[in-house]
Amino acid sequence: MDWQILISNILLIIGLIFMAFGVVGLFRFKDFYPRILMASKIDTVGMITLLLGLVIRHGFVADWAFSAKLLLMMFIILILNPLVAHIMVRSAYLSGYELKGEITPDGVRDESLEDEDEDFSQPFDVKGGN
Image (spheres, rainbow, N blue to C red):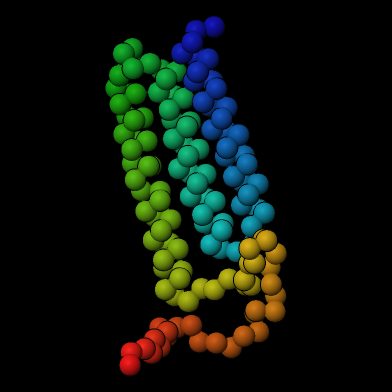
């Protein structure tokens, strides 16, 4: 087996495994913010790994036009996926979307915090000075 095909097969398998674990992670998280973070990671890292495997499989010299298109796609995905995820999360945050419950550092949801009636839409009132 040629080294080029071996390396490309390894990268393709790593990309597919990463995407499979990412899909499981999407079903594991319950709130919007962790899910959008997981979806952004799946798209960015998984697709770049798959496209890199395809570039190596087709070769840089033999089919340079196809490889150049895949490299351009990798660059676009690398730039746009985190940007689009950030825009969606910022839009949700600015529209007032809140989590169903706060998550404590040990990963357990604290349901007692849901009943608080504090208004977090206004900035904190910082008092200081002499």
